[in-house]
Structure formats: C-alpha cells, structure tokens
Length: 331
Image 1 (spheres, rainbow, N blue to C red):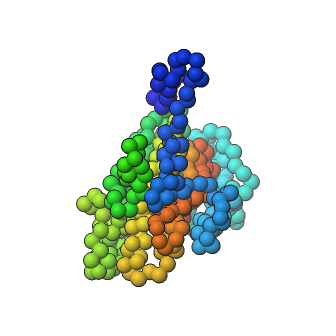
Image 2 (image 1 turned 180 degrees about the vertical axis):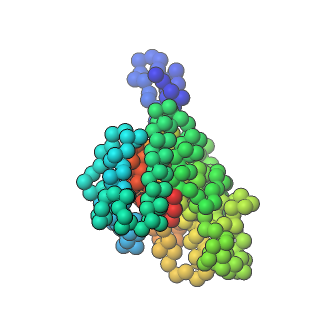
Image 3 (image 1 turned 120 degrees about the vertical axis):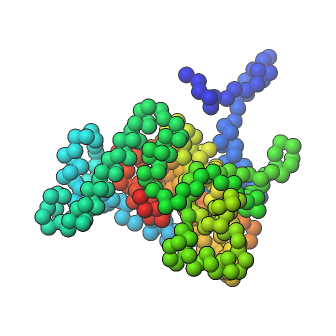
C-alpha cells in the first residue's frame, strides 16, 4: 500500500524511451544540505567519524555511557519483573540487573523508602512500556507518542513546544533560485534551566544585569528569556528518522551558537568547550546525540549520534530512562 510519503517522478519523465527518473528522498537532500550550508552542520554516527572528536567531547560521551553495558535495571526488581504476567514474555541480558544483596523487594533488609521508590519506578516503567506497545500496534500518530510515551519518560519541569529560532543563529543555503534562505526548524520538546532553582536564579540575574535580555536562541516572548537545552524531536513508528535528525540538527546548532555568543560576552576564552545533548524518538527507537562547535570562529557545528535505546521492552525502557536522566532529565 502506498502512503502519503510515496514520491513519483513527474509524468513527463516517464514518457518516451528514456529511463524513468526516481525522485530523491527529501530527508536525504536536507541532511546533505546542512553539510554545505553556511555555517555548516555535520550530523553523523560517532563510530567512523574522522577526525577523532576532541577529548572533551569523548569525556562527556564516556560519562553518559558509563555503566550502560551492565546493571541498568535495579537488581532488587528482578524477581518482581520476571514474575509479572502483566507484561508478557520479556528477555533480559544476564548483565541487565545490577548487583544487589537480594533480588526481591520483600527483603526485610531493604530500606522502606528505597522499596517505595523502586515500586514506583517499576510501575512507571510498566506503564510506559504498555503505552508504547499500544501506540505501535494501533498506529498512533506523533501526538499520541508524545503524550503517552515521551512525556512520561522525560517528565519535564518546563515543557516548551514549537518555538521559532532566532535567525541570527541559523545556517543558510541557496534555494533553487540561488537565493540564500535560513534553514529553520523547531523541536517538539526542549528542557530548560528553571529561573527559581539555585544556582540558576542568580545566573539569570547576572546575565540580565549585563544586558542579556534574550537568553535562548528562540524568539517566543516567554522562552527567549530562558536558557534551553537538549532538544527532542519525535516521530511516530512509521516516521522518518532522517527528517527528525534534520530538524534536531538545526535546533541544536542554533542553541550552541547562542550559548557561544553568551560565553564570549562573559569572557569565555574557548567556546568549543560547550556541548549540547539531544535525541530523536521515532516510535520505539530513541537515538542520542551530542553537538559541539568545531572552532571558536565560524559557527560550524558537528553532531554525533552515539547511543540508542528502545521502549519495545521493559529492559529497553529502563535503559532509555537512564540515558535520559544522564542528559539532565529526571523522569
């Protein structure tokens, strides 16, 4: 069955003796366009990247990935999870559960507060898994995935949706007429630093004192005064990951450029030390990214994909939550 995303060559290209032309994928064209935009944005997998990323970037990646090869599920929950008939058959790697004195929540030696937290976590993970499965099997749209899966995972303190980006921080590329146009896209979700929480309240006050009224790279009247980070781009299970990457890449690059500008105003000698996390969610599949400026001048940004998780299993939901939490998200 042909869907809305199917593309065809114009009828004129299929007439006569010439070989029918095949349309290029729009998402592939846009990803390629970012590489030659001004300033350029290069998005690619971490494995195989050349040259090797700076040590500061790899240090962040190592910190985020530490411990994800084993023990991402609390060992106290093993007995409860494996005995739970409400989640169907589940497979687990031998290294999935952390090492704990026992594997049973009913252990009398387990601290009551810790037991309550573990029970709450398991209940939450089960709900996310079941809702993700429902979205997949029922073919739910992007909004349903956001409401039923993404929001429960990230539990944002402040949710900001679909905010325009300041043109100053966007890359540009020539259109078919040769005219330069801004490559503008919006993220589905982003995180922010609260104005009320210490030490960010005093940081906002200092920025305002030095004339920095626009803190973020967005132009919305509310969000432009708030420091935002970690864009999240969401698609349904039949969505296009390349399209999600394209939109996220533009958002992350603009965010980094704005932070670099603020850093220079504050006298930061090396803005290449700044990094920006983000991720795409296409159905069950979560992919994680880290962006950094390639130099102090020019605004060229490199974005590397370096991790993934999936909500198609209980084990995967636990790993997704761990990865999300380490990016500054507390589910």
